[in-house]
Image (cartoon, rainbow, N blue to C red; front, side):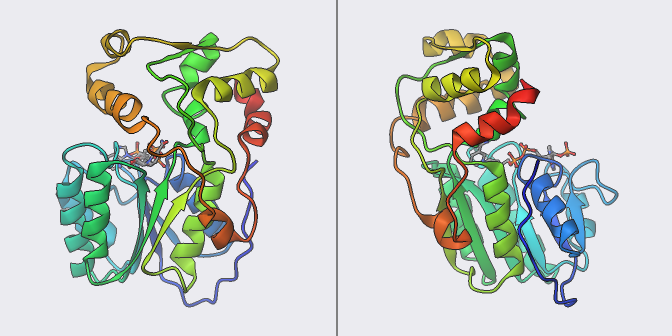
Length: 275
Ligand SMILES: NC(=O)c1ccc[n+]([C@@H]2O[C@H](COP(=O)([O-])OP(=O)(O)OC[C@H]3O[C@@H](n4cnc5c(N)ncnc54)[C@H](OP(=O)(O)O)[C@@H]3O)[C@@H](O)[C@H]2O)c1
């Protein structure tokens, strides 16, 4: 069950464009904005006004009449083409009259940092949500099949990561999209606890009551088993970024929301029926 942040729509808000509005963070943001009575335009290839990162002709229609945008890039801000796309999109947004961008970003990634600087230099209000690994990678993304098969095999050792929940990210995003006081802020969003991947998988096994194991595999074996279109990105995320550089907690989520972030164990318990 997705939690709702109480909001008060002043009746003065234009439609908010939520890119990736059918994805892990975006659809939670859309849900919250709808619940608050704030008009939303979903930005995705399947939306009524389609938006496609690979077809720039779709950008102006999606941006028409929009002042505020949640920017979730696909596939990942860490890929080499991301800064070019984010630069072109930011220019298109400013030209269309957008005055506020909220960028979903990742921690410790060079390309993502370049994208952040592009948005920060656009001359309009910006907020960066620089997030750690999402809990929902295990239930709504590329780790789901492995969990269902009972074995999560990854090229990672015992590097701790402060997994963060997509519901918490959505709560922060909605605050940044709809409230004053978040412009010019970089929020580093982490969960409340450092866990290794082995710890996280053990939490899932405990929540489901059936065996799910974690196995560390050599990077070359992992790469060889990946579909070519995601191999480079996942190898970068697992072997370069996951080296301990992000193995610390921040208090930013608590600072914005005035409450504790959701713990991985609570996420696993609430998600057990998916596994
Ligand atoms: N996963 C993590 O642990 C993590 C951590 C930190 C940061 N991030 C960042 O999170 C972002 C992804 O956000 P998310 O996880 O919320 O989304 P997601 O679950 O990966 O969903 C992808 C979204 O993008 C849309 N999409 C797919 N291809 C598209 C295209 N060519 N053009 C336009 N839209 C497209 C999809 O909708 P349609 O299929 O309907 O088009 C969907 O709404 C990445 O930029 C990544 O850097 C992720």
